Length: 112
Length: 112
Image (cartoon, rainbow over all chains, first blue to last red; front, side, top):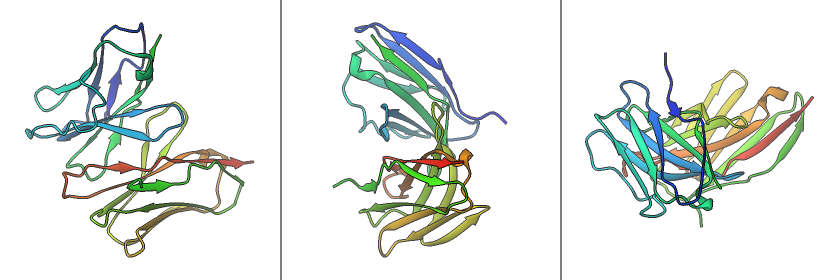
């Protein structure tokens, strides 16, 4: 039984570069979430996809951040023109409807 | 005021102690209450899930929800060094599409 997977597990990039983070949710889960977790901090909500509904983008910190979900399954979080303050762990979670979420291992992003 | 308040700790206890972790919240619409455990450099893992008020027990873990006081608790009996982790409370409501709000997490250390 595969859980939520994320890739890459670690990403080091230079300031100003674009990065793409990938999330493969649990099969059959219609809800998908992206969160950001900075060192020693709680989870910061970024974006939420539920089925075919328009995503809730209310947590995206700037227009450099975007996400898409293709075919109701795989999702990609893109950060354009990365800044040092973007360094964090990016976590993806999926859920059947949204009431309980199952998390992936995260992608650790370091912007130099 | 944050929607969910959680003392970040750290909380240090001897092996075998009973641990009490707590969160308060302000949104009376919350219906689903979760506790997640997060080990260092791992994604959060769903530990307990409770709908509405009441108690739920699973092995050494007991979750309590008091909606009248807007207060939730997680008790760990006979704590073990392997319980050392960060514990995050989380809650959501069907209204608003199950957008989940997380507490900041409490770091727990169980000393052998």
